[in-house]
Length: 125
Image 1 (cartoon, rainbow, N blue to C red):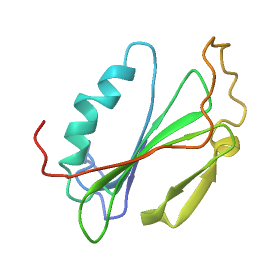
Image 2 (cartoon, helix red, strand yellow):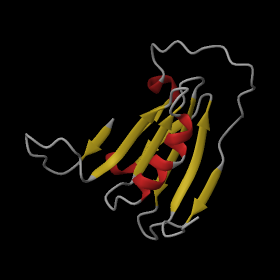
Image 3 (cartoon, rainbow, N blue to C red):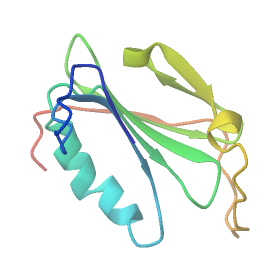
Image 4 (cartoon, rainbow, N blue to C red):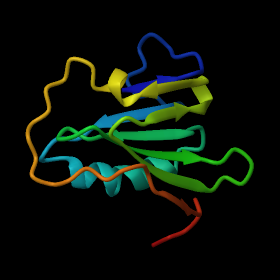
């Protein structure tokens, strides 16, 4: 899902200035969503938030750009947390995100809380 806050022409097939992109992982795309796509999305100047919604458990990885410094932050929200999307001025609970979704049983424990990581948008790793 992509949220674009600027006008889009009727025949446009590519969103050029999204402020939010949401990916739902699958077994075949989880690595790409956290790797190549993350790198590509970080290069979009208008993008403020990239959410990666886990398909196996109630977990959202939130990558957001700091408005002042341009640095990207990574947060992992699990269990009963809340996911803020500042450019839309909304906050979603994991309950709302996973409403009516049946998750498979997984044999790994769910971590409590979230981790915050900051990284520079210009870092080439």
